[in-house]
Image (cartoon, rainbow, N blue to C red; front, side, top):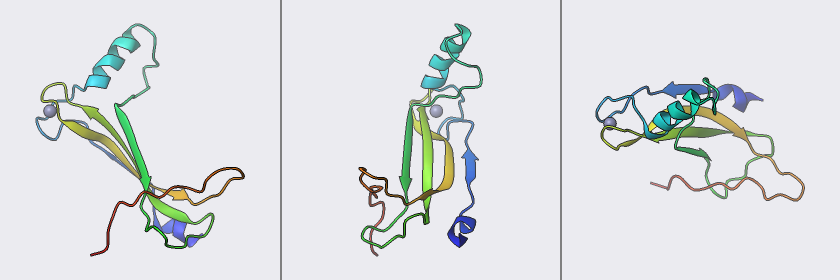
Length: 114
Ligand SMILES: [Zn+2]
């Protein structure tokens, strides 16, 4: 489908706090403790919160299976200054789909008309 080609999955990584430059995060520090005790795989990278959504216009007709631009943002809290920031952002696509017995994908408005 042509729409899928138009939106390439891209991962934007931010390795430090944009406010103070520190790399130590709250969940990262707790994960370090869990890893040291063998309770978590070394390669597992947890975060405080995952925010994800689809960029779409409410009430606009979208065909089933059509790829819509979507985002997945992983956040954590800086241990030095307390700032909440995006550790990484994935720009991707989500397909509009309807499954039997399920409500169609809910589109949360994240924009407005000018
Ligand atoms: Zn900071």
